[in-house]
Length: 525
Image (tube, rainbow, N blue to C red):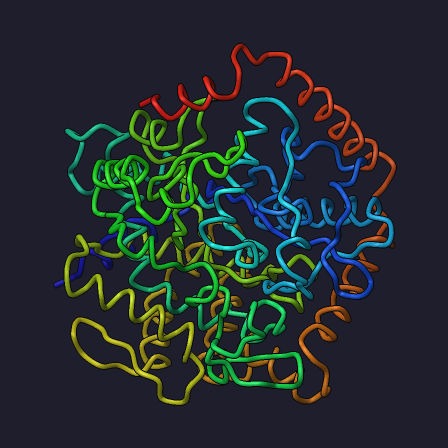
């Protein structure tokens, strides 16, 4: 008897239906720190020629004033998305005198909290709110964690895909919006089940500088590579480990991905739930805000998930409100390290595999995650992050022990028809090629980015900071010298000027003081 997955595959293997996958949409957000020539975090303000971080559509900042974030518009072709991302890097590097883009996920030389400037977004209410939110992150989690950089991969399936699947499942009585949202949550649950595979294949942050720790890494449990560099021998991603984007306060949140309603309710509840350690910090000191509130979460974005259901919200609208009212529009994959050997942090082939992986997650059966499976999913991810390259390392699948590489290869076998469908839909051969590249990594641990990073460090005898500086100089020089073209330069200059005007307008349009603005925002449903 054919499984549900096989039946869905047959539906989309039909020549008449394959073309829907040509409508998959992508967007990429890449974070990168601005650093000086001696591997220190830049202390300069956001470069004037890049415009205003608050209002620029494609070049902004994340936590720190030095942490650039490049955001592409939506494209259906992965190559177009990556081309635009490359242009953003080229334009930025042309306009960053004496500064480089840091090549890795883990930060450069850190010299205490005072050396990590919090991002500033002007004096408008929304700009002040963004800065206060970051103040809160500092007091809650410390500044070093906020200097870790990554890549977010935004992915959406076309409406035609959901319409065909809805008809195939006999769910016409369910609204198209509700079916689509349920489908994305099904995708997310499967992503959580299998995301350990992405950490093995793409984890690229198995080493870092001692300066990340206030005690020099004495209590970190990492091994010393040299006098400054620490590493995890079989690890893949320090960024996604307990010392990176993970924290004990959020471990108690129990955010549920079984339904849209449960997800929105659990996030909304966390934003309203007082948390004594954050109450001890206080809301204000000497009239200055220390955080937006003293609850478990200040806002939704504080929840550090590996994947998020998303919808573009209207101006002033909360993300959870937009999701509740209009459903899921796309998903944002957030667990990807920056590959320091790739100029924009992600290769074209790896991006194509992400599409295969996410389509697979959307077509596979996806029961709700409860109890024992929830713990299993969490432990598998942690094992891949900390011990993913240990020979013979085992995970748990439906209560049974299974070797990571064996399970990974079986998953790739299951994904093979999807790679073929995507190639046929896009008249390419890149998807199948990308699948075989990942298969090679599972058969040879040395081919994973984390293994390549540690091997380069050990072979060259260079430390983490030295290697990252070398790669940063190489990539930044290449971007600076690239021929961007007068027309594209003029386009980005116009965007920068428009962002300056838009930030001034944001201040002019404020109709209340910040206290009132914040109170009304927090009270809004």
